[in-house]
Image 1 (cartoon, rainbow, N blue to C red):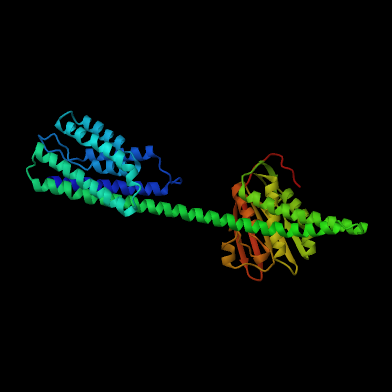
Image 2 (image 1 turned 90 degrees about the vertical axis):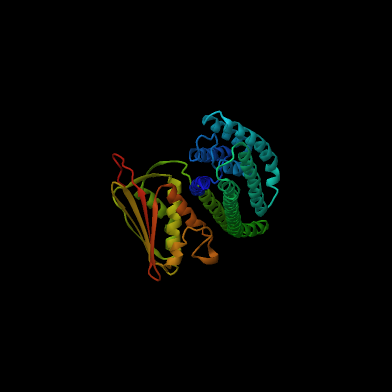
Amino acid sequence: MEITKHILFNFSILIILLFIGLIWFDRKRNLALSKWEAYICLSVLIYVCFLFSYHPTPSSYYFDLRFLPVLIGGLYLGLGPLLCLTVIVIRGFYGIDLGFYMTIILYLPLSIMLWWLYPWFWKQNSIKRVYSSVLLTFIISLITVGTLQITMPPANPVDAWFAYLVIPAIGLGILSYFTEFFRNNFIMRQTIVKSEKLYAVEQMGAAISHEIRNPLTAANGFVQLLMSNNLPRHKQKEYLSIIKEELGAAERVIQDYLTFSKPALETIEILQIKRELQQVLTILKPTANQNSVEIHTNFALIGSMSGDRQKFQQCFINVMKNAIEAMPGGGQLYVETSYDRSNVTITIRDTGVGMTKEQIDRLGEPYYSTKGSKGTGLGMMVVYSIVKAMNGTIRVTSVIGEGTEFTFQFPSTHITNETHV
């Protein structure tokens, strides 16, 4: 059973290489395989079949499973004619003899047959494709062994017939099943990803619509009041101020969305941490006073980093505003910084309601907010996007009833003659 032994060895190598190829394909970031990439891979498989083929002397025949990659590529990718030509070319390097001419006689008609079968093959369902590929393999194997029996009868006919009628059909059945399984798995994964994206768009649209509609509805109501001719002057100013605030709220929602969807930094400059945080605190001081929150600072004398000033301030406005809102009955807000040659560390700590571990783990997720129906989660999504864009990290610790601590770390930037603020 010499032929059977070598054919089985050939098939084992094909299975191992296919498994390695599937792992590589699965780990590709771009899960699209071009036809040229597929052709190169299949050509390598064909060459490997030749490399480990069985060549009894003084015969001019090489016994292997080269036609299995040809059938897979021809039926599933439409590469049949090109792969058949590749087989003929490679066989030519082994000598122009009877075996070479028999290869031409077999593979030229096969190339035409595969080119003709390819459109029909893809009209069948998955199970029929597997059965069709096995049947075609059996027919080709029958022609091959029949030709062998006529041109050069083997010493052990049972060995040749078993090796070419049983093993290739089973082998291609396995390869075809693997291909169908992996293809269906790939399609299912694409469907899941697409569904998740559609769900994300729906949720984002609903959240933004809700957040923008509220201030616009309020602004529209006051505009209608302003259309009345008998309003006193001071009431007109009051209503215009409210309208301005509501439109500003709608603009902030849109800005948060744009920042999340495009977190890339537009303007890179050297930021002095102390100065930027003082600017943020100046903006938030009225909100802190309104909520009876005391702000305590402990800034390092120096500390700088590279980043986008507007996005940096927006990031910490969102974090500190959340911290202030987490202390509805008043409390303490601590803002501290530290600096070394590698990193700038910014710590923001409040004495608010705190968060559970599950809430901490979900921070930054789309549409998740610890404020319940009052929040959309856009603020923390923006924070995580900006920090990631600036190559920073976030660590959050919290205790229910005691407060929450955010620790931000960014790569520091060394500048000469840094101004102390």
